[in-house]
Length: 110
Length: 114
Image (tube, rainbow over all chains, first blue to last red; front, side, top):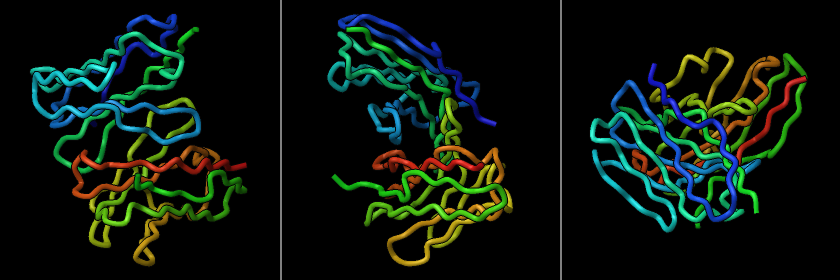
């Protein structure tokens, strides 16, 4: 089945540092999504990418959709304590379901 | 901002018991979904529902699972005879078109099977 490989699994950074995480897949997805999940909550959409090669920003977040539609990265600049959480990539391709990566757990030390 | 509402937030049940997890999707949404997340793992698709029928389901969604939209507002997931491995966070989601846009998740129901 379709799978997304997300890395790194976890990150420990100092406040103010930049962060980068990425996802790769052996399958092509029409849309790549980046979600953030806080403890005890559902995933919340951060950025959606639907054009190959597209680079999109949302405040301090920047994400790119790979030209092959098989990979994406998410950058967070100047991290702050509220960036703490689990970040998931997800792909949608050919059906309504979303396929999620395993997540990157981000810890920001003040 | 419109929300997907799930109840209860936490349910504890004995193995072999039936459970029903409830969701109220966003009112103008037409596509409804259930996902689950075993503790510390990724979010996994269970089932999608459109026009009063299942449109897609995963291999996790076996005969022990069923979904229903009993009225115009609720969307339920029933697990007929719970197993220990059904313990997970269950997320309901809804969307307008089935595309990523407007795909909104609820806060989840934590199911603990003992």
